[in-house]
Image (spheres, chains in turn purple, yellow):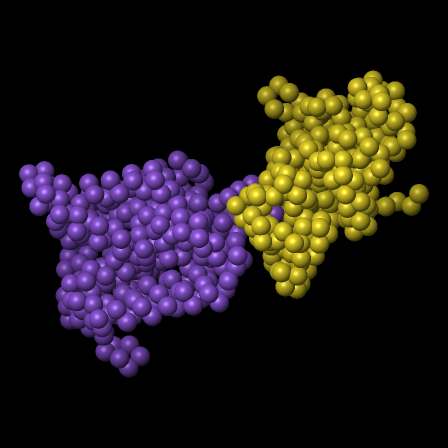
Length: 326
Length: 246
């Protein structure tokens, strides 16, 4: 059942493939994939909490947006460099995860979903309320020169498509390896145990509340890292990213790819990105007067997955053919 | 007899559910190294009593002492770290995890507490060897037969290196052969740990217990050696009368 070498090789191969794709992909797909990889990081952060630990949050837009605004605001109003702004974004996410986690984790199940959603709505409304700095719905475009930075003797220009893809793939690879290490560690074992039976886990001597809080913070940090990277790579910060649909989307990506699988979030995010991309134009051609929004496609995908593939693509593969998949 | 310091003590321990006094002012004392059986009719408060000891529920009144320390207000998981292990009446192994992972959760906890050292895998193997489940290490716990799941439950308790092992109706649903195996297992365990055993099967109780505490309607009805309990008229009327041919 456990094949450590095969697992590590598989993940390294995926990483190598993604990094190499930078040099062969057509420009359009490189851009689509850059975006999808950053969003896949968000999905991986969500997966740690929902997939592995079994805590269904409906408020993860808050952590993504915390990274987005944490990076965007410090760069725009304080003139911070890209690496510093990135750090600020992640730190904002961690602090917010700590505060909201302590409160939300007093609840479980449906109540937890509602409480996390409410927190995210508060954050969303705050981005509108402080529109003097955030420009609310309209958002802010981060100026290109501010995003260029030097690090380790190299010069990075995130507005260059190749560099942007490389940074996105690099961040993705880092978080993928982090997820893998976590999933295979003793800590990961306890995360799954909490998901499977909280009381039994407590009766094995574990402080379940503290563990959950740590996972919320890791998940918040990863989600915020995705948000900060999004702001700095694509140069746009707007309150849409704090709205409820960005809490639902990571849930969808993770469900489609396979909850509690390391590579599921990548598969789900990429599949969904292309599905929305192609189906929107196909639907517009087939049914010109219907004016179907991409959210309609998202909704239908969610229903189909829940009804027919409750374990997602990779979850189903793991169950049927490859039990060794982490 | 020399005064042995008891491992577990309760004083005036009570817990009610609504109007029902499930546990009613119980004074209890357990010496280290003992195998103590708790028996009594259904609803006598046995599971409630050990749940209070394990910290799964909070008492209304009374104190609980473990190894000379007041643990009444200590949360359940902290008691486990002190060495109070509880195995569930209704089998509650992690069905979707492998047998290995089930036991590893207990082993890595004990390592983290510094109560033992070594590789997790070695600790898991030792615990699984004790219940003869080693060759099923890679199976999903939920795919095993019921009797094996009960043994896994005990292995998880063992792997916690308990100083007090609470077994809540461990032989329920086991076959005669499995019960014989269980008796042999507990005879090994009692060399290393103190055991509190809730059990309905009088054969098991008589073979294993040094002393027996009989609960009835939340109170201690009688306490003593197996022989004295068997002779006790009150006990016979309340409980043993129902199983006269035993």
